Image 1 (tube, protein in one colour):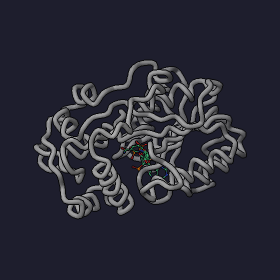
Image 2 (cartoon, helix red, strand yellow):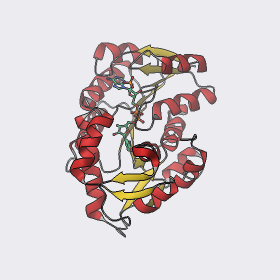
Image 3 (tube, helix red, strand yellow):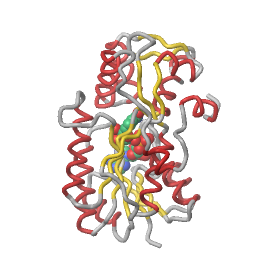
Amino acid sequence: MEPVLVTGAAGGRQGSTGRHLTAQLLGRGIPVRALVHTDDGRATVLRALGAQVVVGDLRDIAVTRAAVAGVRGIYFTYPVIDGLVDAAGALAVAAREAGVRRVVSVSQLAAGAEALTPRMRQHYVAEQILDWADVGAVHLRAAVFHENLALIADTGGGAALSLPMGPAQTELPLVAATDVARVAAALLADPELAAEPVLLLTGDVMTIGDAARTLGRTYRDADPHAWHQWALEFYGSAHAADHLTKLWEIFRLLGEGTGLYQVTPSIEKYGGHPPITLGEFAIHRPAH
Ligand SMILES: NC(=O)c1ccc[n+]([C@@H]2O[C@H](COP(=O)([O-])OP(=O)(O)OC[C@H]3O[C@@H](n4cnc5c(N)ncnc54)[C@H](OP(=O)(O)O)[C@@H]3O)[C@@H](O)[C@H]2O)c1
């Protein structure tokens, strides 16, 4: 059987969607070519699981060309740093040349040409590039990953979850990165499985106060400037710090009772079970 190419396969600080997907596909008996950026211990684990590991920079057409040869489908993810559109372009060209018929890409819930952060607008451009390439692109527009929130909750001594989101009643949409991977696994296991080109993935909706409590923390409203400074150091990326500070501000401005967010049907439809709530995620996550 031809392999599925999984990018971001080593996983990182956002949700490790590629790592979860690699394990899920291998668990279903589907061979995986795992593209990693860095050949380190994470790549060793992938090899031990049975993945064929290739190393390279997704923004390099020479890398993507070699990586897509003979694959049955591709999972595209790129971290919250500069370079998303470059990477989408290099992948789209290579996939089109190779005649790939399904690419599943991870995007953001509010991606759009008029979206409020540069990252969200870049996601929209990346979606368009993949659509033009005519490679059967399906864009998974995901809410905030449980894993992302939990990582922030695990910093700062562990008592408070500090975010510049205003009152504790501010709402946010959430999804487990493992559920994003599960939807991708279904679409890549069967490239003929019918799907709309954009799937919205929200698995839980709650207030930030309840989310903090669910993660064993007390929510604390942070000063946006101070949080941005903290994020610059924590993520080591102005791109990530700028995007996330603006994202929390958007939620803060929208406030409570917006009615804007709801659990979406695609997770259960493609993933095979109801979404993992933040509460379920919190119970099962490793000790922290
Ligand atoms: N975080 C959220 O709450 C959230 C919500 C919705 C959507 N999203 C979207 O989800 C995506 C990120 O998800 P994720 O869970 O896959 O990210 P992740 O956990 O941060 O993993 C990213 C992976 O990409 C690799 N990588 C970095 N630079 C690369 C390059 N130039 N070429 C090839 N690989 C590279 C990293 O490897 P190294 O570590 O070795 O560099 C890492 O393994 C982003 O597009 C983001 O906008 C995030």
